[in-house]
Image 1: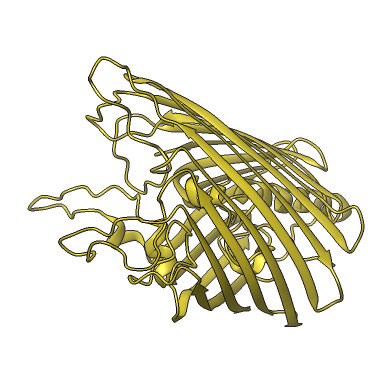
Image 2: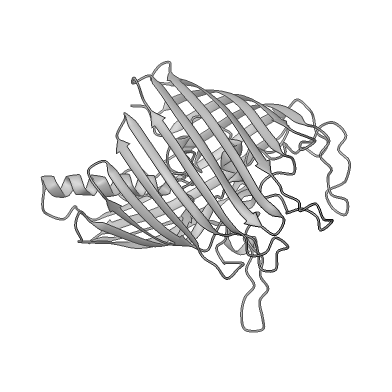
Length: 407
């Protein structure tokens, strides 16, 4: 069976996961629908489970631009040139017993340091600790929940979740490529708050959520963000997701004012045969603010072929366009939400060799292109300490050899 493209952290046999940054509500809904099926087959409560899981990811990458600072820029987690890198090591524990569910996942590596870059840094006081990315980056997610005996079963959870936006996951094992798309890197990685999931039928599920916002364990403004997601799942055939997310995401006192942001995300995974699979992902949004309306539109297409039980070939293309408004009266422009240029795009080809059901070796070529200088190459201006590195290339090309194993 083709492994799924869902789940930021894989733990074999878990009944409640909620783990994609891009698909957590979809997985939670799938698990909840599975519990409905079990209940119909056997009215007795399912046995209590406790699962341990984990994975390790590493890679070697060659950047053909040979940047002097060794950085493959705006790439997410495979971001170092000409070095062997241990990118992430994660361990998790999950439980599901007597309607009580929960998960704790810990991690270390430069992957969490990258995706916690946007975490707000707030000062402390004589009797209160400060909070920043350094405090939280070792926690991939942590939540607790309860499954109420209401209708088909109402799952309520609270804690730190990986984002439900998009189809890609945090763990390389669950993706078709080794690198992540520009959509994955640009859109939020995690949220803190509460959510409820209810199975509308054997295939449909609804999730409603209230969070601090984008990439914020601790909130940096007075407003909360709201999300609603509908999913449809036919195992090994089709998976659909439609999500709306809204809230104020700028910090207190931002020049853009109390700007309410609106995001819509949709993706579909289709398996027309047991050897061929496709994914389409579309995301867009607006943010009216004091300078005008910030807006973006982005999309990605994926294809994968199972050549044999041990070899998969995959391709991905994505593009991301952002509009940054200015009011034209000399007061300036809004700060960009995602990129320092108006658009970015990439094309990726990946060979995935799996000699064991819990091991993956990947060889990947990727080309990144942008509207202006956003990447590094050759002699890079700056030293990264008292003089920031200055991007000096509009494109970059890399070859990456990556490996991951899990249990």
